[in-house]
Image (tube, rainbow, N blue to C red; front, side, top):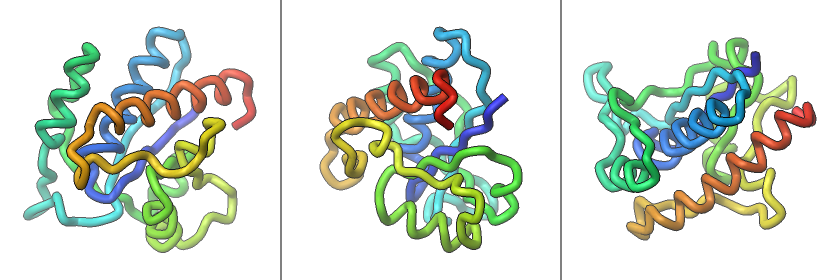
Length: 155
């Protein structure tokens, strides 16, 4: 079973959205995956307890019939490198920070979500735009392409 870790800056918007979108796609597609998400920063973690998914992100997921109940922000750690097969960042800054936190990428496990799609680039950051619908669209498209790649064993 493949183990996938989605990563964004705070683990309260984009990476948890990706976590729950791909979990739903995998479950509905009969693909067995272990899927989690984490942050490159500690900004959303206080006294060892992570903040829940940001309300507008939670609401966008709910509009599509998805629940992220119980999800709280966690930070990516160097020891995660040996626990997961693939680390999927939302943007270029995430990728840089993942390399720093994980101590490099000797096994080629770090990827950017939108690189699985024909359009490439970064997932739109709704923190600044308040456009969770656009972030959802990007993440959905990226997760669909990622799942297709996993099914065809390109990863």
